[in-house]
Image (spheres, rainbow, N blue to C red):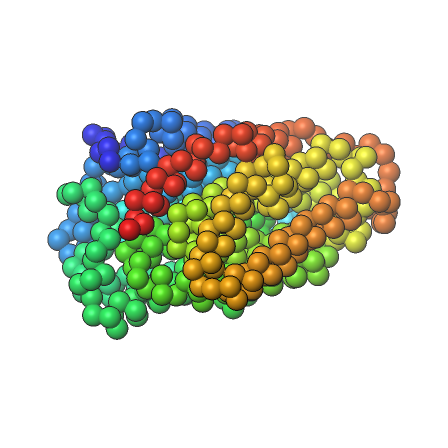
Length: 515
């Protein structure tokens, strides 16, 4: 592991986080275009640093900052970019930077809508401040090396995202934002309770020992079995709420469908996927025996989540709500990979984070394009035949659906293959009945994912127009709103051809913990 002399990784979190506070003041004198440019540059800084470090020698072993905070009882706070956190941090930085650009044309439309509704919400400066803070806090969670540090950044993601929904969302946005706040705060509190219980008995909250630069994989042996199980279950349930797996998913369809669309593209999956990442960073490393003992039950929960999310996606008429339920299904895939408890499955799960980040950023952005172009239209049944009128938008939607269903040339193919191989490998150790049941469950889940994706694609972009809202000529979308979506989609295609950028370091990292 390489330890840096300067806190480079800390800077990519702190610089945007602190600079964002100035944006409302700047917004009083600057135009929205200037604010968008400043915000995008603030978020491009982390993207640039992470992209450079991804190609640096030794990423698989890890690149770590010097300690920036330390106490005897809590441990040390630092930031780590390694084979595990690299794909997560890259996805967050990429999507948030381009969503910041996309926000300019989209939020122009949203502010106009709110003005017609006589709703006086905070200005452009406040919007971009909250967006940048949200992005920086997510990066902080991905790079944290301490349980308390992770919790702090996890809570920091909640505050700006809650306000973004409450100020700029749709429908009963105040109630929906409050539901989102309560559910996800409970998840964070459960994580904290489990972490404090663990840290009290283990004597440290460090995931990575900053003196030896070795992960604390054996700390669980210091805990009584009852305390170990309690800590692990509290952390696990807290992360499940964040992921919105089946049973604790109630909040997600409301929050993700009624958020302003750029925020929807960040909530799903950048924020919810962090729960899956933490299952590996915290439970797989620090509670391996508990996670291994629970793996069969987690695989069942994952399959139920995949199938439930797929069925609910098929039943939706609201495009954004369909994408929200799809995110629940996709989190099932991620959980299945983690539950396999082997190198291929866990590597596939983390690659699924990247796949979902790219695919859902494209799809939610396409939904936003349709909302802007057709004055708030979200009903799939009122669309149809749009491919001939909006060919580039249709092409982007197709690429987004290809990502989340694993059709080449998309990174989703590799994540799905790894997850399936990992899950099948685990099922084979459980006997022939488990293997057959898993295969049946996978066939149903994958079939549903393919069905809701391409049935939706057909209903929106092919066939004949079914309403006055989408009829007529001259419907071509301005290229500026499409440009950031094109960039995200192209990167998704490139990663199909160069998946080793992430897969190699992931496999090296996970296999180092496989006895």
